[in-house]
Length: 423
Image (tube, rainbow, N blue to C red):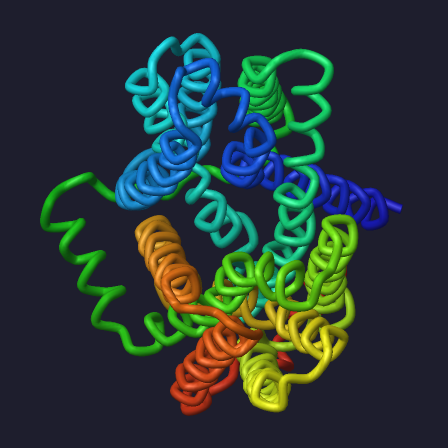
């Protein structure tokens, strides 16, 4: 009976931990996408152009990248839960003052603060590795499962954010969107504070190293000179770059080239979210006991195969349904590549999980932005540009997976892995 109660308590803690981390991880996609429907109204309010409003997205993305680098670097030296709480408070304050802005300069300033603060979410990965690392073997399996659960929840955020923002705009005003974001961050802050500093702690105790320049340089050297760690990062980063390429190219391909209606476009995009959520859940529940590197290798082969399919479809100029099938398969593969690549990278980074998380976030974002830019600046006349960049991303992901194939797989018979099935 005691074992049953302990198991139940462990499951409850994991569910709560996943929900809390998903809340924190959702801040950035919500802040990027929720106010998109309000851009024309905001342009009128600020007596500015739509281009100026769209620039506020770029400001956020740049600030978010800097925040990930900063918080990732210091998170190995400070309590990660306090860093997260600091970021939530900063995000809440900045969101409030975005709503109070009267000029585009104020808007950009507070969007930058909002973005930098949301970069503190980078500690989520380090906290996962810290909480579920019993040793190198079980830690990787557990981390992979928890990351999959969190990604399954987070992927919903950018899908529903514009709809929520549109409803808020229709009922209230554009300012209310940012007040809601502020309230959301405060709610996450209160919940995390209650559990972290109450009787039953959900977040792990931090393992700290002194914040000194030599230690930071040592951490950078450990990560940037480790071929295995970098292979994990780039395998995950390039696989995600294909999704960025789709986001940039799909409005033209689906709506202009294939004449899909806006409602049809929204439904087809929703299929991608369903595919990613489904594969993440399969990765966690069905394949949870399998070594993450082995799953990543399998995912790499799949995404390489899908990349070839996407090129054939574009070359033959096949109908929309064939493009959609290829895109959905590609996005589904991310459920095997992204979470397992991150889990493997966290194990290989050892005590520098925070630094690894920051570097991974910036590189992943940078690679994704490059793929998005490549699609945007190319003259698109068919699905060829979007499909080609997605295919290139998949091939590059597979290239780094080939490097990892030389890495010995973790011990699948380790008894710790059996405990992972209970998560």
